[in-house]
Image (cartoon, rainbow, N blue to C red):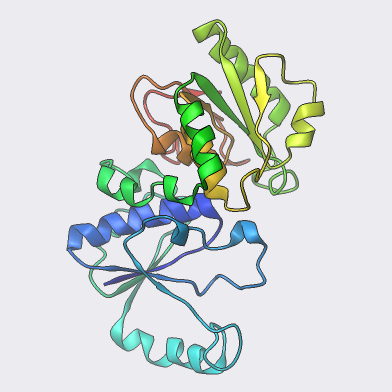
Length: 286
């Protein structure tokens, strides 16, 4: 068995599951997902959302309070004294492609974000099926999803809420990037239709950046599970990705070689998307 210490929002969780599940599959062992880092008081966007998808993993939960709570006395003592006797540890070095990952063995506790094609290739359709977003969608969302899939939309993701003041992710000017990316797509298609997704959709509506070829997707229209909006985004024919694992996964989930995907050149203020292994050879970098 491999134990994954999951962390972060849905985009991060998808990368983590795909990478670590693939290693468990190579070893022929089961996957366990430990929710140590998920506090019930955490804002909903950072809840553990993978359990609404058809994942193949045992999920380890903890009581909200008491000595057996995730950070209760008994649990902390167990992690310090007993866990090292029976488990190895692997921590992915931040922002790296680490070949040691492929040498992880049975009974290893794994942590990291694994945000690179290095950890996702070769593409495993069986694992991606375990991360199908369809089960998260209620009937009314399913109807809209099928409508989007049957059209020729270009998804455009604007990330503002959690990124605007972040020292590493707030560097990207969403208006300039979106304008340049839409112009690139218009030059390819002539008259595309853009479907705008954002954690600040009101800003998008009043920014003056988007023209008559843009439609706005109301955030959480079908509930607060971010997998629903991600499903709708993923079903667009082409994608303009923010510096976000969320919209990156939308492009990856329904990948085909003729799809046009645009990605920011700088994923963080100091790290290029290409150097991190986030740029597929067919994608456009701006």
